[in-house]
Length: 460
Image (cartoon, rainbow, N blue to C red; front, top):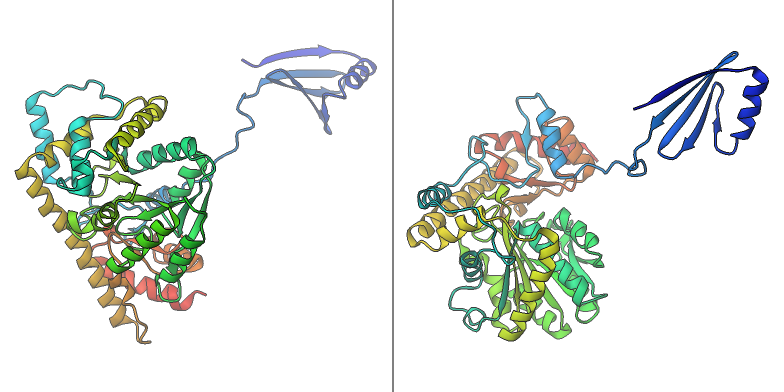
């Protein structure tokens, strides 16, 4: 509590006291301030009277305000907008045609089964739910894959994709000191934060070509070749975020060749398995190609998108090793890293995934729902392309919109043009020109096309 002390003294005495405190006080026209422990002491003079006030100062005074998150901040701005035409295309979360959040029917059924069984809420082991770990590894690699049959995969349940990436970053920092991670330019905004926080150095490899709004494959290969031998290379397994531009199968083979030549360690981020193409197997083809080559690598997984379990924070980190013995040792160290981070992972989402994948009926129903979600996004992508082509009379080639895959589209708009999309058209998106087609409806495609064309041609 602030304390107040009134003192009455002659001007000479006040002046004498002021001179004694001059080393501590900052002198103002009518205020004198001194720091005393946790207090700021302010003195005000009123002729012959002076008043000293002690005010508590926070121990955290030197902590500055953090900048807003570039992605989550988009949603906050969207909520504050009162326009009826506003669109939130910033956050990568699936929406129905009515632009409402969607809980999969198969998730509701799995939760109903869990309730009927009366399952408890006890702590999981550090590595997570065993049934989930088995299911997620088999879903990624295929149950009959050699790496599964030979028990060469160390799998730990993680806190969705972000937590799984962070756990792997801690493994790199501890057991590969000085090793660098190469990440694509551009990439998901949180990748850099994760490696910075884990004190793992990183650099970028070329990926996006603004001239073609496509893949700079030659630049990508050249940069991976130029990286120090034994570097980690972060790859998006499917539906690259933010561009939606994926390598072809032949390009993936070339990437694997270069990785093996340079003894690099691939590090896949798989956030959209089944959600990109609608097929779990097709979206895992890049990962399985590297497994067939006998390579050692890491894979982070997330079930936020393909099962809509955004708030359950369910995912996994998988480390493919050359032997079962190596996998056992890696898993033990992953557990050791996880223990002081979060002790053990949450149980609810893990049981949902395990119950769905482990039940043939629910598993088939999930695959059908994924196809419907992926199909809606494909339909929106096609309608947007058709609208852009019909409205743009210049003959510009907008086919890159169709060539991209997954929930995102990289429009090719720069920051000023993206600002125009928001300020004039109430379309909320990230400043790099990325839009989430999962937040777009067929009914809004023509409006969005008008906004893109206006911003592209009328804003430099």
